[in-house]
Each structure stands twice: as C-alpha cells, then as structure tokens.
Length: 233
Image (tube, rainbow, N blue to C red; front, top):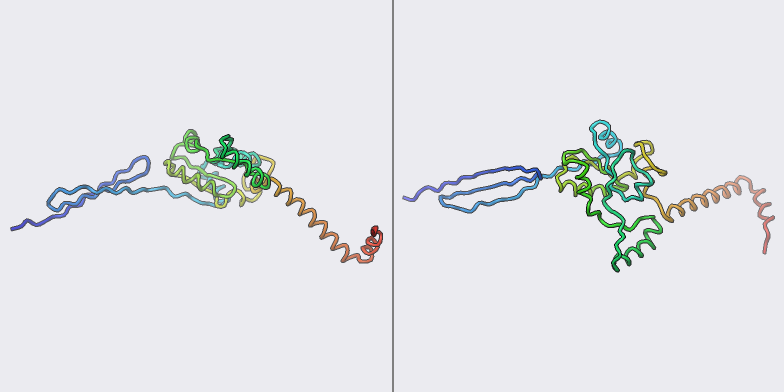
C-alpha cells in the first residue's frame, strides 16, 4: 500500500539592519525538494508634509533639517541651523563632452534662470551618514520638492528610517514660517538670472502704463494738452 504523502511548510523570517526580510518556504512531499527563497523588501515610507507640519516636526519631534539644494540657492536663503548636504554639486569637469554641455547650459538655463551646471554628488549618502545615524529624524528640503524626494529615496535605500520632505519644496513656504538666513526669502531663493530682471522691468512698465491710462481717463483735458506739447516730426 502506497504511503500517504504529507506536506510541511516552514516559514522563516529574519530581519537585518538593512530592513530586508527573507521568506523561506520548504515543501516536502515525502522526498527531498529544493528550498525556495524569496526576497521581500520592507521600506520605510517617506512622510510628505506641508510647511506648518514641517515646523512642528522640527519643534516637537526633534527633526534635523537637511538642505539638499545647490550652493547658489542655499546661499540666497536657507533655514537657520540647518545642515547643507547638496544632492547636486557644480560640475567643473573638463572633458570635451562636459565642456560643450556646460557652455550650452551657461548660455541658456544659466543665463536666464541663474542655474549652475551641476552633476550628482557622489558623496551625498556618505556625507549624511557621517553626520547622522540611520535612526535620526531628518527633514529634507529643496526648492521645488524634486531633489528632496530623490534624496529621500537614496537615504531610504541606505537604511534611514525616519525621513520627511516638504511637499513642493521651499517655494511654498510663507514668509516668517521659519527663521531663515540670507538676502532673499526662502520661497524666492530659486529665482535668479535674467528672468528676475525681466520680471522687474515688466512690473515697472506695467505700473507706468496703468498710471498713464488712469491719467488719460481721469484728466482727459490735461492729457490732451500734454500731447499737444509733444514735438511732432
């Protein structure tokens, strides 16, 4: 009489410092079978908050602020007592390809928007690790929210467990929300180049045109006399 086949399941969970868990499943049908191993990754979720919530994280929960913007934006304005660890650094490489790209950048984006030509900071994760432990509570900030999200993903992969970011970045922060250092407001630290000058010129011209329109509308006789006084060629 044939023996009755039995099935046994063994479930083994083991955690490591890198927050990875292995699921081991062994099935036995009366004979030796290979063990199947599946790798499951457990990752901490990044906490996305607004400016007011971020302020509470700093004051109440002890989050440290890590500014991941480039040096130019950081120098214009940054949160007081923050740590500066740029995700991108200025690219000063002199290989032919980089020189061409840098020239094109400086003649367009650099000129109009004041953006430096940068590259990914290869020491970013290590720089953060040298100052904080994986259990540290970190609030990552940038100007638009994209760099802080990318930085959070890198730190998450490196084992950091308590990370928060400001949704849409410092550009959404109202004046006075944080104590800041620099000549500009935090929300304006990303503005530079000819765009800002053009904006100022447009504002002045707009004001002049509006004043002229109001003058002609409210004082038509005086406006007509002024026009008659202007030289006609």
